[in-house]
Image (cartoon, rainbow, N blue to C red; front, side, top):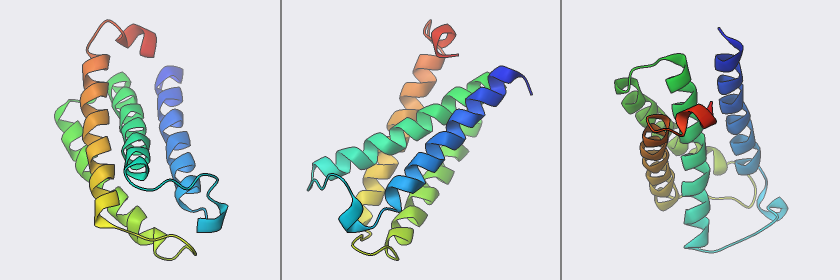
Length: 126
């Protein structure tokens, strides 16, 4: 594994850790409480960022684009599990709408990441 590939996957791991830390905060400890639709934008944005990091790492690693479909399905399942996980955290709840916005963010991140990694910006994103 080259240093570039290692750094790309370490950034994915960092994104996962940050996502889990944020979603594991008890309700009273969440620094900003925004209602809908802002909450949904945060869900979509967080998962879009994570899926973009995965596209970047996968592209640098030489994965075929078909594999990104499986990545998207896996991330959507991860989002569903994360919603269930929040049922056990005081002051937090789970909802299908949050999961739907997680999934929309995943699709957006995969599409944007694929487009950017195939463009001239790919050199800058490495």
